[in-house]
Image (cartoon, rainbow over all chains, first blue to last red; front, side, top):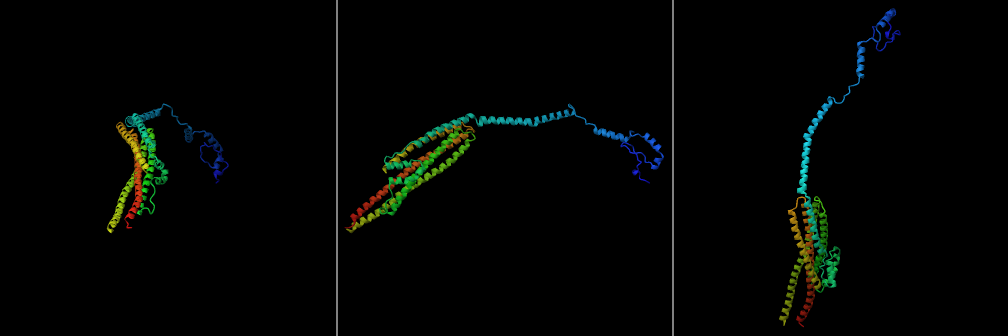
Length: 302
Length: 106
């Protein structure tokens, strides 16, 4: 039995052609008229359920979607949602923001009228300027008034050094001091103890004079710094004034240290003075003892 | 030596005049600052406190000037006493020689 699929006698069928009942080739040969009759009874355009469904499906696929027009039911929903959102924002955001704004205005008013009133700040600044003017006069008196009083050349040279307020002149004090107060006695002209005492006293006197020059220079520096800070203070903002105060505090601490150094030097000088007086008493006692021995010996031998 | 002693003494006397004026100014300033504190606000207080510290620094400087003058005077005083010791020593050496010469048996 030949394969019907390889049969060349098959007729081509269109896509929409309904599958017909398979008939044996012999029967086909035998009944060509019947087949022709059947073809005439089933044309290719004959509607079937399958064809109808396919057409409907294609039509549905190709049909455009419905467009959403304006002023529909969606807009009403959106508007309602927006209205609800607005009421929520008014309730939970606008009211707190209004409270915050009011609090900020109250704070600002408090700061302007109580904490940082402009009149009080300007008054404080003018007071600072008045103080500065007054202190500048006194400081200039300390700086510029000439208190030197020596009349002789050697003492004038020493005095000008002592009042120079220049720490660079410290090294020149010793020669001028020796020109005025002399030097330590020669080796054989006095006892070693007296020479030591004299040398120590001269040294301490020179130390004190040199320290006085340094302290004068430091005091001038502090006065200059105070003048500068006073001028800055008269132009400072309320926020920067504490910074200047802190800087002034630091300078006060330094000044206390310098004052203590000067007082220590003064204490040493007075200590040396007392020690010298004691030493003189001791020397006088020993000298008297020796002189008494000589006198007694002279009187008893004769 | 007498000239420098006089000079140091006069210096200190002049310095005391300036120091007195400075102390007057400081007291006056302190009173004004106190009055300023009475009418100050928290915002203007930093000016007052800073000005007080600046005035304090100036007080320290004035005090140092006075201590320096005192140092000069004390140094001059012990130097003066030291000169007297030097001279006394040399004088005593001569006197001792004279006394010893007169008292020693000839």
